[in-house]
Structures are given as structure tokens and as C-alpha cells.
Amino acid sequence: MTRSGITTHVLDTAEGHPAQGIPVRLEARTPDGWQELGAGRTDADGRCTDLGPEHVAAGDYRLTFDTNAYYGERDHFFPEVTVSFTVADPRQHHHVPLLLSPFAISTYRGS
Image (cartoon, rainbow, N blue to C red; front, side, top):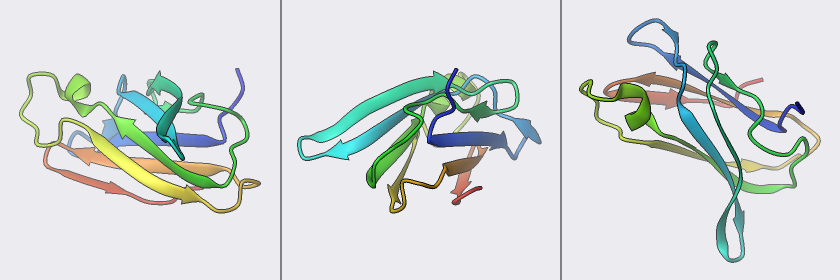
């Protein structure tokens, strides 16, 4: 399996462990709108490393996390989380972690 040029890692900060099983979708902005490049689920470590192509072009991308699927019937505020970002240097790997709790989210440019 090829490692994607864009990866993510989701941590459940309320529970203090990786967020396993979250469906994640990777899309790229095109002149006609957003185009899906790939999809996957976070593994036992909360990581999703096989979302799309190994190399991506410069441009705008977004990751959408289906947090409804993760929380199920548990009380939560965000049914999904979308993180949009720009790839300026396609030679670099882009890692986008998500820190998740039922009522708060945080993200940053990872390494």
C-alpha cells in the first residue's frame, strides 16, 4: 500500500486515546468544484495514511471527518469536521492532525 502525500491522525482528547474507525474523505479543489481523491478510515492508532495519491499537486485540499459515525448515539456537537488547507510545495509531505472532543476541535500542520 502506497503512503498518501496527505495523511491525518485523529486523537480523542476527551477520552485520551486515538480515535479509531472515523471515515475520512480527501478532496481537491478543481475549476468545477471539489473532486474526491480518496477515502479511508482511521486505524487503531487513529491514523489514515492511504487516503490518496502518493504525490499531490499544489492547490487547495480538504479532509472531511465523519464524526457522527465515530460518536454514534453519544452526545456531540459536530456531526462532521472539514479541514481545508493549501499545498504550496508538493514536494513536501502534508500531515493534518485533528484533536477531537465532543464539543471542541483543533487542528494544525503536522510533520
